[in-house]
Length: 96
Image 1: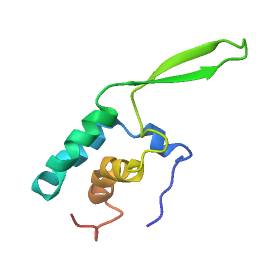
Image 2 (image 1 turned 45 degrees about the vertical axis):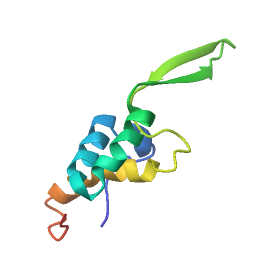
Image 3 (image 1 turned 120 degrees about the horizontal axis):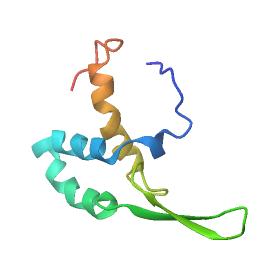
C-alpha cells in the first residue's frame, strides 16, 4: 500500500477520540482491557513545555497524538487510522 500525503508528524496528529473509537471497535477482542490504559494515558490533556526565544518556559496543552516514548504509541496510531484504511476505495482487499 502506498500513502500520499504529509505524514511527517503523523503520530502527533492522530486525534485521541479516533484512538478511543478504534479501541471501542475491538469490543470483546481486547477493547475492554485496553480502555483503562488508554484513559490513564490519554484521558486528559497533558502539559507540554518548551523554552521560547525569550528564554521563558512556555506550557501548552497536548490534546492530540501519542505521547512520546509510549510503548503502545504505534498501536494507538494504528487504531486511529485503521478505519481510514478499511474504508478507502484504493484498498478494496483490506478486511477487518
